Amino acid sequence: MNSRELVKAALRFQPTPRVPQQLWTLSWAQIHYPTELEAIRRDFPPDFQGARYDPPQLDWVRGERERRGLYVDEWHCVFENIQDGVVGEVKQPLIKSYESDLGKVRPPVELIGKGFEHTNESIADADKFVLVGWANLFERMQFLRGTENLFMDLAELPAGFFALRDMVHEFNLRMMEDWLRTDVDGLTFADDWGTQRSLLISPRQWRELFKPCYKEYCDAIHKAGKFVFMHSDGYIFDIYEDLIEIGVDAVNSQLFCMDIEEIGRRFKGRITFWGEIDRQYLLSFAPTEEVRAAVHRVARALYDGRGGVIAQCEFSAGNKPQNVRAVFETWHEIAAQHH
Image (tube, rainbow, N blue to C red; front, side, top):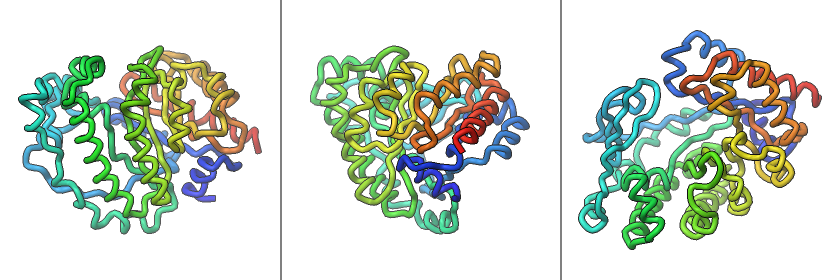
């Protein structure tokens, strides 16, 4: 069973000889622990890969996304970054007023239909699961409007809010159509919907305003015969059922913000849990044995040897390399106990 087959079996809740694995990194890890990072990648090679994408160079894009200083992205959003290795923040959103500014915002349509000339060629002989990330909705709205302004919009629901949402959503759909014509195995969308203890907005409002957009993404991806992956930080327990309903195949969420055992009782075998282990305390400050115990806790709640789990872990700012390594070592030990 190669890596692609392994991941697909896990997504279909079929027995696998081991748990599929994937390491995410911020460039911070490469800057601070290059030797340790290289060793982890060597000892626990990923079962996932990306695909070649060569978008046109846009004249207004400036700087680097994870470098200190200013970065101007493809939507003209300006990010200010005070530390190498992480992503900065938008301090001056483009839309201060819908009446005066919304009409000035232009989606980067120059990217549509471009950059895919060598995509299929780059994955023709791949034996790994080819997963590409392509969209966010709520976060892009925050970048354009500003987080505080956008939450005021959610209370008042002006017409401009819906115009902005639909603008971003329609652009995402067009970009998705390009990816769906390629031979990739799965597509990812990402929006952080949780605080430490609750959703950022009420579940009712999430269902009314955003769920229909995500369902459109899921329907199109499944129609093309591909798998749906979604990432969301924070407490999202209240919308797991909705994600299952609209067809999300694998969810990457911060399990340790929620009741992991209740997640297992409610949702095990219904959606694949694509990581993760707590980055805020465990990977940064805990003794290695506590990290191992946390992986065992996740496994007891969510894994029984019949798929449904991907051992994803993120090596981000402040995390200890020995703790990241312990995550993958422990998952290998757990899988061996099931076979």
